[in-house]
Length: 397
Image (cartoon, rainbow, N blue to C red; front, side, top):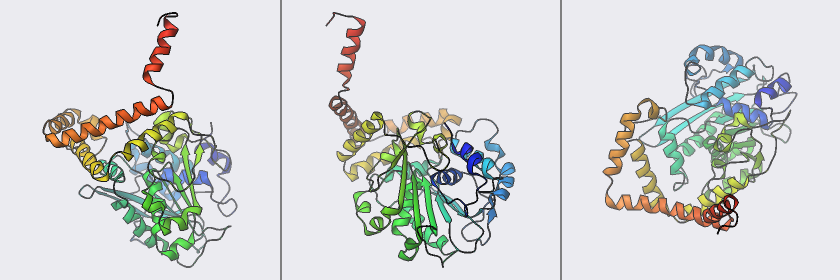
């Protein structure tokens, strides 16, 4: 059950000039995107950069608070671990990090974060990597994710396009080839969605330079996006990965065929890329579980019953309830549970009759869809209970 740490032990001595960027490197840099890089990596409007080795030294002091005591955000813990593993490895230590951005906008339901890495010391743009962060602990980001169910261009997607266009301008002269992709774009979860969206809708001159797009357990898009000329132009360069019990990576529409990856975690925890199993230069392939296929069908069937206006109203209502106690982050729930819970209960009580009816209807439709699919799959609750009863009481009806 080897993961990224073992991979660095196996391949960490091989620089990218000797051994090209592969799917496991994609996992490592995508995990690194969750690192709090403020005050460590220069921003998009700054000209400088910092090596992975130097960033590792600075991060020890700046991010030690995340390693002391209980930290709810395992993505940050993973990112700090990744940096600790790669900061002295020849393959990574001289890579230059730059262009870090992290913005949270509660008014516009936007959470956006990204950074870039130069994977070798040559002056050309060859092997320049752009990585988009997935949803973090901020509720604005979770709201933006939910908005994707009715909006085919959320704020973070638009910013991702502008960011890729801008950062590609750092090295404007190189073009990709089969052997040497000039630009690589990657991301995990919503970050994978942003990686594809930015690559599909960036300037055509930039798009021509993109060699590979890595999407890791990322939600898909509306059909209009899949059918667009920009998406179709980049589709053949997308390498999408999902774990065998994927839920997030099965949402919405996908034009690319994902590679199913083996994870040593259970259920939803497989969304954590640190649990993905690796070989010396690739990810371990497997097949989707029956549970993942079932949940995917339930969600798709359910969403097909709800029009975009109902989805928007439902999401706005749920978000209002969740944030009624002034929570701005998932971490606020356990730290101020009493006030958060009280605010949520009050928000439900104050809900007008029409809204309450809609919410109950949508939840009811989800339960009906689940029951219908259980029966179609031969997994009806009644049948399961009946079979269990017969095992316990042989001969009884």
